Image 1: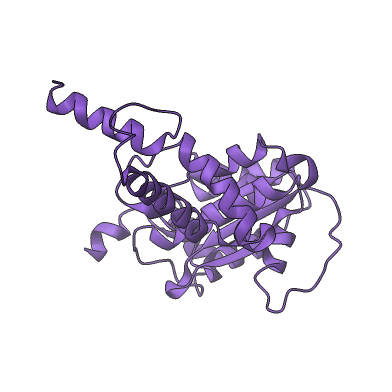
Image 2: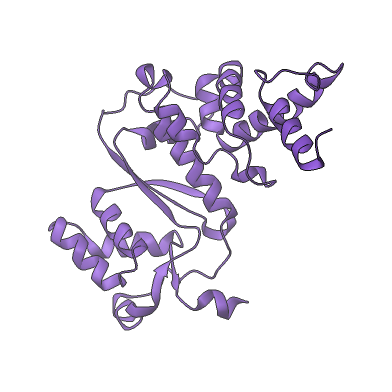
Length: 249
């Protein structure tokens, strides 16, 4: 007779993998156990990747989600975390041949979820002027809800178009795009940004001061508008003081 740990491990394996057979899997009603976690996984994917669900349609998404759920078990009971690798899974799937932008759209959905559940912290005021920014430069960091990516497809244009109801057909220019996701005033906001903005955001994310990040951006893009970039980051609540979260507690 197997010990409890072996039984539990075998039960989970049989529950999530239909290829597993044996006395346990042959028990009447065991299909109910198999279907429950798989359905929970697919439902979590639909909730976490709503734009992919819109593009593929619920039936096709369900089929793709089921394949993913069978290969990748949840590692946390918090299902909003489930599917972190779903974009890479889509990029390696046959869907990428016909929908080469799909994986990047999924990455934006993921950024949206991360921004939504990120920690709260007071953001810098949009009224902050350049002189004050310079005086606080060593303390200014990205807000916990700030996310960004440079994508090699027009996925940001496609993602934004699918947030409109009713959806209107578009013909995006096939080129790379930057996307920045934040949560100003409690609501997640997604906007397209330039390659120069992404360079600055990358530098900030890497630990550079905001002035050092600005130098990196201007070195790479000499015609970038620094004042406009700062104003946009402040307006969308993307910046905070490094000790602001402690002050907020």
